[in-house]
Image 1 (spheres, rainbow, N blue to C red):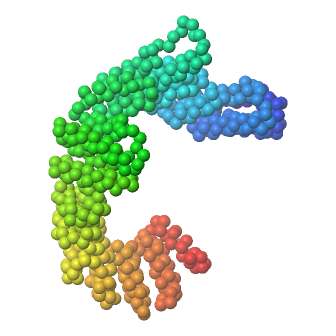
Image 2 (image 1 turned 180 degrees about the horizontal axis):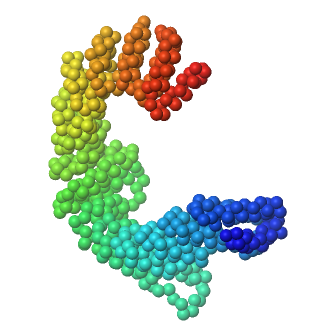
Length: 594
């Protein structure tokens, strides 16, 4: 091992001498670099090798390269790169190669080497790294795409990029992303050739017998890729993605027309095709540029109506939820667009409400759109329709907690008399384990809108719930309501009736403590009782509860002599890390830092 390390260190000496000779580094810096390099080299040749050691070595060498680059810029010296930088770059690639050989499965390691070679412009080495990486990881389409882009962009080799895409398709014959990027690459290649031809013609340079192929210039190679992709991958969404890529290039009108014709003929039963065709009407040639806002709004309205005609035509042969979803989504997007013309706003709203009603009548309206429907009705002040839709929505999606929750919130907001009945229905249909927010919503509604006896009945029912979270939450709400309606005496009576009725939450006890402390003359004996009951339930894990109790004893109504006993009990009762946290807080309290 020592011989190998010594040989590698000797190989460094010419480059280090050059660094000192040309004034990029001092003699002291060169010696320091040699010492650091020796330590790193020995780590790489240990019996048990670590990936971190390789990464540290590589990072050190890259830092040296960066420092050399800065020093060169500072003193304006730009010579002898072959003798200074190239050996370091070669050495870094050698270490990368050793690391990727040992840890072949680490894709990030491969990508780091690719990034390094791209940055430092070692194009030949870049191709070798990409080739080795793909030989190890042919199952990852993203790596094939990245490699092809490197060949196209960094090495300016369309032929190599095409070759990589063809190889990628052998491993991934039905991968959408590979076909999309291959299609894009062929169009970029054609565009590059067109620009070259244009520049040569402008310069009036005679290229002799060499002629640019009209087929390639017009994107025929991309069309071949499209044909192959369309045969292997079905679906309007994928074909549309290729059409959108083609639309980026200004010479592909013929190709776009071909894709569009085949899209319309082969995917009549695909809602994505109809959605695209409808939205195309927005971009169709219309009236000349209009100056007034009303004129532009009127033209926009006509375009949107033409879109709706296409959607209506689609629904005649494709009356599905997916098709209605596309239609409603379009109307909703247009409704949300800002405009200062009130007539256009109203027309968009009427159109949206009409389509929502039609989709609902067809029983093909998605659950999420009912929320949008309610929001539109509420914003326009149509409370009668909003109430009706809220109730209807819960009937259509009786098992959906989200639907019940939003509909009930709407009815509560509208102060509808239907809310009480709907709350009862919701609890019958919703999974009890998910029903807590509904109980809390109903509790708030009862406390503000219902008669005291009805509210009392509701809380008694909630206390008997078999779901612990519901029962616990209702205790808190019941105590809060008792205090608001009957004052301290009623709150204490409620607490007394519930303090043995498990399960509890900490908030239940803390609420009673808060109520006691709000009185003109709070009783410390009562506070101790509340704290002791809380500690019986949560004393093993809640160090904050112990600290609050201790602070209470240190307060105006407490007895500081009890703090030592409480500290001793807390240390004995708390478990795990809670003991350490409590000890820290108690120490800070004792020293006056809390």
